[in-house]
Length: 116
Image (cartoon, rainbow, N blue to C red; front, side, top):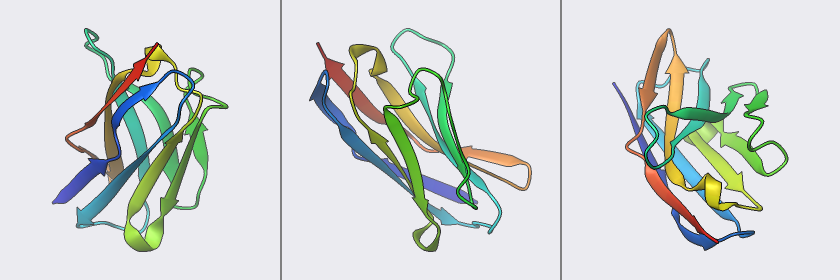
């Protein structure tokens, strides 16, 4: 089993920054992809905003390119999301996820609220 614990969410004014962290524990394999998704209020779909492979290759949703940066520390099985120039539309619950050996696991989520 895999456990994911997010931290770092909160309330910030538009234009501000936040850094999210997610620590993975349990059966973590060397080859995996970690990432962050978000679900905005009233939306049913969870949007995948950023991913990073174990080798450090990254991908971003168009909505966050140039503002968010994903990184990871393989020794700590931890993934980070640095969010800059935050906008009210970034308000959402942010979920950490890991995909390995054909299975995907999600964390419980952390709330990010951006006030205008």
